[in-house]
Image 1 (cartoon, helix red, strand yellow):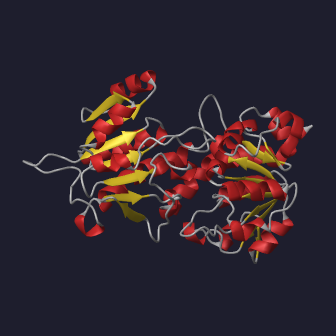
Image 2: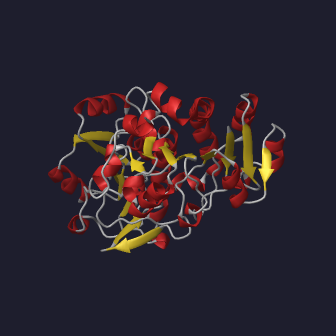
Image 3: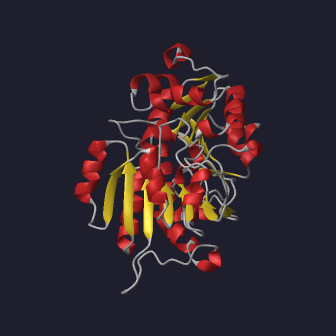
Amino acid sequence: MKIGVPTEIKPSENRVGMVPAGADVLVKDGHEVYIQSGAGIGSNITDAEYEAVGAKILPDADATYGEVDMIVKVKEPIAEEYGRIKKDQILFTYFHFAASEPLTAAMLKSGAACVAYETVEENGTLPLLTPMSEVAGRMAVQEGAKYLEKPMGGRGVLLGGVPGVPPGRVLIIGGGVVGINAAKMAAGLGAHVTMLDLDMERLRYLDDVMPANVTTRHSSRLAIQEELASADLVVGAVLVAGAKAPNLVSRADLSLMPTGAVIVDVAVDQGGCVETIHPTTHLEPTYEVDGIVHYAVANMPGAVPRTSTFALTNVTVPYARVLAGKGLRRALQETPSLAPGANVVAGQITHQGVADAFPSMPAASLDAVLA
């Protein structure tokens, strides 16, 4: 199979969909790997490093998309890329369709097979989402701490406090991978951390493994409102795989929070769990609503591309090998963990979570579409 890796062009996105080690494996499997010239520069990977393992360098995006059977990316295609995508081409990347009807419509129209990293599922986990959730969870506290500084628009709170002055208070809504990594960072800084989740078994686990400055609480509308009243930093860490994130913090709730508090909504790439959230970029990462600083960068790990690229490709390359080795139909039929990743195939939605976000676009059975 011919596999292409284009340069990511989403604003401030410096990751790349494949590292030389991945290209090396695929070339040794007998495939042809094409890298757009400069695709790895943002992650400090040179064209020469790809060429050294047998990959071929192409001059631009048109050539890269035009040459190949499968595209391996990091982020969803943006409007500039829609016209380059061919019918029956496999796109293997993050999509987060439920947050964007235009993207969904464009991919349906393209006739391509869209296999989404974020919904590949294995043993009840999301293995291709996990490493970026780990990065984003840790970054959420790092960025939140920065924007709590007064010159950045925040209320001037040091999360760790100092002797004689209490630490800042961090509210984390969601106890999954993002939430647990955010809690580790916030607790390590010395903040007082509260984690909310609906799953009592998860809360018991978190209560066992977290340090003493992390408190767990069963999530409810009332619990969220009570915790918002004293939170300096709120981290939205809610995930419903493939579907739009639930709205858990309303605009009216912002009036409960201290002026200058910060919200970092990591769920923004799935629509966000805060009513007032909308995606931002690393170039303009924040905005203010009713005195509350909102940080909503939809590709947070893109700010640390060297770490993020290697963490991501460690887990994506084995699945790319399956897709390339077996082809789309056999790979999806014979690899149970890959099948949930098929979100759009042959002009039809094949993931119920995506269809639920857009009532006018019903889902079709993946088996029927493949047949």
